[in-house]
Length: 418
Image (cartoon, rainbow, N blue to C red; front, side, top):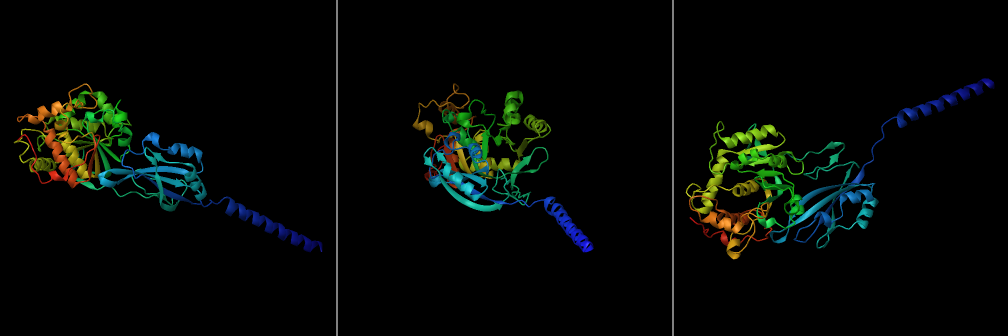
């Protein structure tokens, strides 16, 4: 009896020990599977046609994150075309977490703009890890611990990196082209401008101390080659354009304004641009190919009726900027560009030529003198009439001042000084 009791107890203890060992080695020490919680892509849309989503007008994601700490909240800014060629914005908010927590958030958070409550719609519901992130330029998610990379931007023929000759790769769904005009003074357009996926500015137009009216975000600078020398001589401009994380551009486009052939051994503007590319490697310095520059001149002749040389003028930085924007942007909002007849309708207008020189020359007086010179000077008024034509061919809108392009000018001969 004692022997059998010993055998049974031995077997029982062995079984118990094996069970405990299996538990600790298999269940306790093995990695646990991460439970994936649903993520919801919400779209905040507004039917209003004015400025939307200014920083003070809607609840911030930071405050939501503090109030609902169990949720992962991120944001993607996108845009859609609104009615009558105006723009309505979409603020996509990706929320990861339990469905009841997501619903609780929406029930307790009100998203507002200047004209009232914003419509909230669920765009998509997907299963992703709670730690999912969103690429800043897409709505691609992190699936199964690997990032779904967006398709590389397409090449843009006619634009080449000054260092290696590689063709520029860039595509923007929606661009803000910010003119340097005084029409932006006291506009408070800065927060709106900074929310565009791509912001294009011209030359060395500063944003420092003018952020409320013109914003500070800059993705691309188009700098006419003659301005390279001034940029080299002003280190504070270089700080803003190349060093300051809040204002620097990722790409500098340098068009030649009066010829299509560049002597890369002796041209001082080319050598300065190349020097900038070496000093500031994080910024891509891009030149136009000779064919692209010739195309810009051909377009001028086709629109105006005579060649640039016959007109005894240069192409403006604004002209080259608009052509560039048409090449890379699906839709364009131009800030600060008045209609070609603005000064005719407002002969006593005192709007400054540049927003950053409020006490300088006025726009209308300078335009009048420049337009009427038949031996030199930019033809700004003629140029604006051409831009209005382009707005009928492409998705281009004009803001601050806001005006609609007239289709009546499409088949009419432009009134020019030539």
